[in-house]
Length: 213
Image (cartoon, rainbow, N blue to C red; front, side):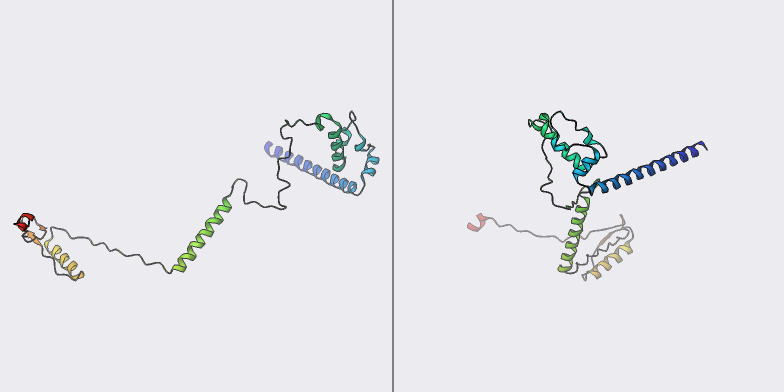
């Protein structure tokens, strides 16, 4: 129960803080809108500040950094400070980040990049893969329908000890191949068919000496 009231109290405080912040933002926006309609001279007179361009070395620039000062007056004061302060005006070139290394001058307005935070160039790579797949599909359609794959039927050989099954299988295979039946010899002792015995062959050799003689 105590956790419930603690969370409720924290939620009420957060709501009040958000409401206060919203009021501050609205008041600041209203003030900026009013100041935008006035000239720099009118604003300096209302705020009781001197002309920032008239300030010199040793003068106080802090009043121009207050929150109520418009941004354009702050910019003028800081530019004058950079001019009158020898430390800021005479940069020796050895200061880190002393120059503008950005590409703001070369950047195209409203430039969009394919890079995504946390994903990198994933979307770009996926798009290239999709285009490549479509190109392959178009090429396949242009070449014609793909040839049907050859169907290979496997035939299970009969038990070698079954003489009738072996002879029937041999006759069936011979009939399918439109060839003469295969003659096979059956060994009654081993109960297994043996391969056909090839006929005897007679070979003759002729030597070069016999030809010349």
